[in-house]
Image (cartoon, rainbow, N blue to C red; front, side, top):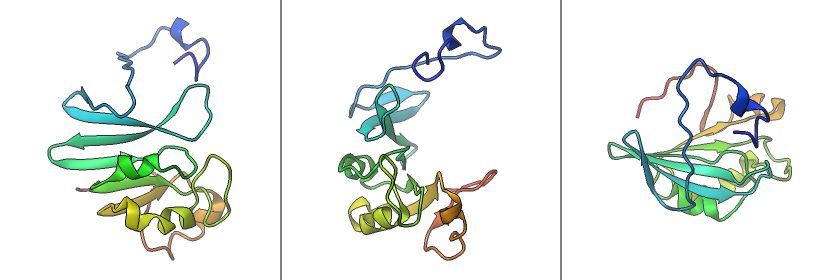
Length: 143
């Protein structure tokens, strides 16, 4: 946590905190969920990750912040649910996905459901018109 929050290791937490290191592309069981980490393209002081989580026969993949990388294909294969960054609709910003890039690779990604998140005002203004779900505060999702 020191990488992302300098000084955090010196703060007394009011809750239990269990930090686990994830090896790239090797499933690890965490609380009954098999989690596989995939390295993506977003500089943050430590490798940024897409996460593939498998539990009770369901698969959820989260891209995190990243520009397009072939690693996302491995992370999302057969996913029941893909949560993908879509920072802008079509404007490409280094180290971030845009909606058009996600859609251009949708046949390769092959999620059963797609929800976009981490959206700028440009994307938020288009949520009513796009062909997938948009994340929003408090949204509940049934699988």
